[in-house]
Amino acid sequence: KEIQDMLGHGKETRIAYLRADCEGCEWGWIPAAAREDPSVFGRIDQMFLEMHFASTLRFGDLALSLAPVVRQVLAAHFRVEWSQLNLGFKSDRLTVHKSLANKHALNKAC
View 1 (tube, rainbow, N blue to C red):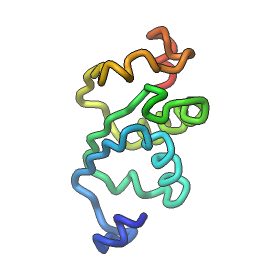
View 2 (view 1 turned 30 degrees about the horizontal axis):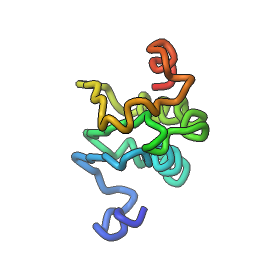
View 3 (view 1 turned 30 degrees about the vertical axis):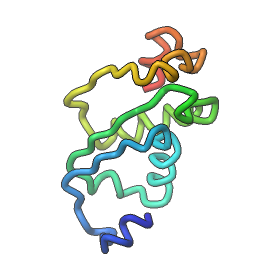
View 4 (view 1 turned 90 degrees about the vertical axis):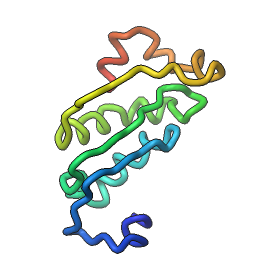
């Protein structure tokens, strides 16, 4: 919300492109933004978003519980045009939540 205010974006302003790479905070800000202003994602034309699944990047039990909400919000407003697996830093690679250890669970989460 603060960025919208700083840029002078009101509730009617369209956002042509939003890039979000906040190193794990996506699990918190997406549900919060949807709660605060349910129309916000409908005003974004394109979004580039990095999703992080390492516990070193804030993916823990809380993020796992919010994953279905994040998926629902994104699926309601966007179509995935491209995705790529990025293994990240070596220190993050072995810190994936235990419930996401197999690909089947990862597909369910997001």
